[in-house]
Image 1 (cartoon, rainbow, N blue to C red):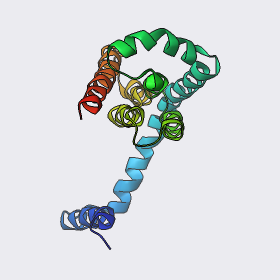
Image 2: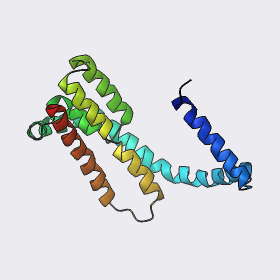
Image 3: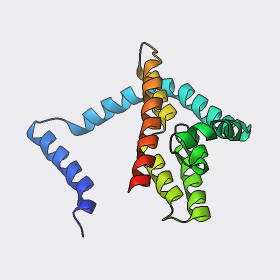
Image 4: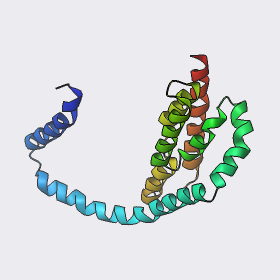
Length: 169
């Protein structure tokens, strides 16, 4: 058995031993934490439902294709292959949808192609921004749009820089 397979069990055992040394009542602490999770889940649900519905509407309405076609010249100018434009737009909304799109790109262009490498970088360097922001907005008292803009800009800059590296390397 390799060490990576033991990391999680060792982490749990370490926390358990630490709690025993500090004389923390583990079960009571666990149940108290679970009581606090219920209001978080209730406050989180509307944000998650909105993100999931909007991402599905974005795809099913054809708006995704229209925006991708509109942005293709800009993507090309920035060094992003037009074939991965849809992935760049979908990744901030849906992790599972972008995984399916990545698989389609592998099938169409091959896993070792330049397009597939750029797609991997776009997939790996990005985050499902709107899912994370749903968590942020559920817990934040002040709703500020600056984190949205920063996260989207960071995702896009990572894709541009990653495609540049794929072209150079």
